[in-house]
Length: 589
Image (cartoon, rainbow, N blue to C red; front, side, top):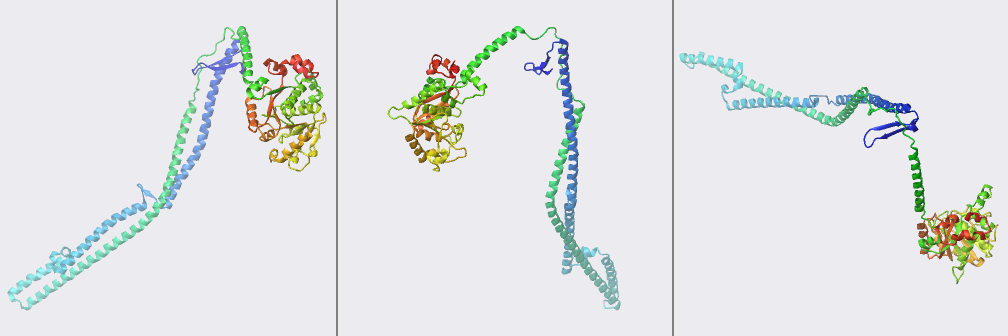
């Protein structure tokens, strides 16, 4: 059903068209409308579920936050009580007590100063002998007032008696003694008043000292409270933060709760599908024209793409133009003909290195005769004996070239030896059917003799120097005098020494091997290896003064090769293919 459903946006608008293809027009319209309605229902369900999940989560979170707020506020109050920081009207109790005592101290100090001033004034007047009438504290005394009244009465009586009886009359003297007694009582009362003032000064002074002592104590408590206040403020901030977060979540919960009851879909149906009156597809003529156009375009595109991607070497002319070294030969690719296909199906798969021994007159063998002749004729003064076969990258067929060239050389009567100098992959050693007594690494370390290295090929008179499976080293053995001595010994013993090396761009030791060789041949896979890679490898060898005598193209499809035109002898493969009595004729047609 879904394969017949079409959903697309109409232009740059927010309108979405829903279509359904069916042989039944009623079914097509009904299903299109059903998909639209189900989309709206699913959107509503999704929004409702999302809101419900959010509310559930918020409710759980609110429960946790409510407990956190309660705990934080309780911690504030507990710490406030423990630290004596209980407050009213924004200040602590200690601060309020200090404020109250400061007010009392001011009042009490003023009272003390006033009492001291009164005392000093009375003492000063008494010391000067001022009349008691001039001392306010004396005048305010009820006793003094009574005594003054008595003194006035006695004075009047004395005056009356003195005028009647004279100053020496007994009655006058009696009155004078009464006057003296009253005066003594007045002085005694004055002293009592002064004594009372001194007592008031002492009391006032004691009150001031008591208040000051209380203030000092409270100030010490306030200092301790201020240190506790830092922790209190921290607890209050935590409580306020928890309260703010709780209120925020509570507000969000209320909003979501309101949305849950009034959830609407974000889309609506503008117009429903109507039952079509005519079929919409297929348009047979249009499909035929489009198929033809697409086929032609795809064919042309594949041709262009193949040509763009073909950045390898195809002909001898390409080699000499792109790389700048002589072209030697094209080695045909085995296994493309129908005869070889039948052999493979029968389980008689043949290795390329074995093919030349069994088909010495094939086009494949002839390509190696060309390679051997090029090597032998590359220097007319001194025939090269040590030849390095290498490639820019792995998988280019150099090991096949080494085995095939060695066997052909031995079959041609030359005493030939092949040396596996690839200490990493050891592909040549893995293909050998006979294991040596000692490997190349052991010999170069000085732990074996030359006679222990040599292994005889079962299909030719060619000799092999291989590597043992359990021999490894991190040393650079090819730069040692032992390797040079090995090459000298092989030059004396053999007509041709072929060295199979690691890829030039991957292993640096290949440069040293090539430098010590008489000639170097580079193998490059036909139309696969990029010209830039081969050029880089050639430049590396030339930088160590290696004698590059040419390049061999490997795994060449001779039938496809002909379309590239005249570039080497393979162009004429159809004309001279009848001269090679081997199954390779089937490969070249």
